[in-house]
Image 1: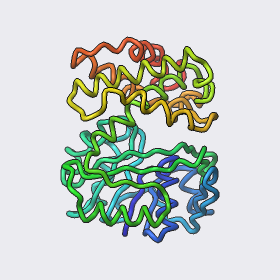
Image 2: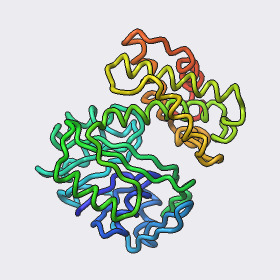
Image 3: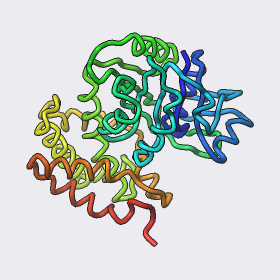
Image 4: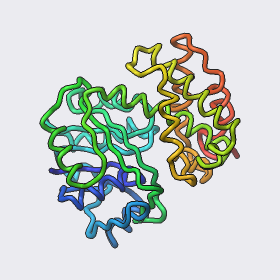
Length: 307
């Protein structure tokens, strides 16, 4: 199966390396020093699941040089969705599937006008990893899960083929007929984790240990659940309580990628996470006071550390 990974960072690097080791014909689209290191030394993933090395790594900064593929893992940051979507048009043939693995809930909706609705699928990635240095991805913990599916709920041949390769690669993979629900389940979790770890500059373990911060976590998740249900999404009213249990087993040192970006002085994905929840809450008449407060506190950092 020919696969193009757009963005070889924490998400694309981890899943792409596993798929390549499993026999997938994987090409990474990257840039700068990371691309140069991958071309020279290959791609190495290290951390909780051991070490994976892809050497040589097929890598380029030009999607057009790859040609049409069977499947695209689309792993760019949320602010790059439209520009990167236009750049990958040469990868998309009549049967190509494109799985956006962004945080948030609207990447598929934003990609469909660019690539055509038949090409776009839905996907949720659960992994904690960052680029440690050019050519090296460091994973925290051993959670490595991919949930994906067609937006219309059918079990397509391309999705079944990709599921078989994921299973061969050895990570947790689920082909779902309800990808919107899966996206919102992650959204509920991530709006709280990204906002609170970013505001406090603290890892998950510190949040769990402080009863006030833990209650804030619960409050934000319940607000986002209420927004999703008002929007007609099939999520349970007690979803927040169900999600709190697995959070207790997350690595204590883990932080949301948005918090990592903030600490590095980079742009953050706030408008598509807490900002999106607040906006949808206003649209549907659902109060989100805790989420709105976190959003307001983080807004000055949207484009990086304020001058």
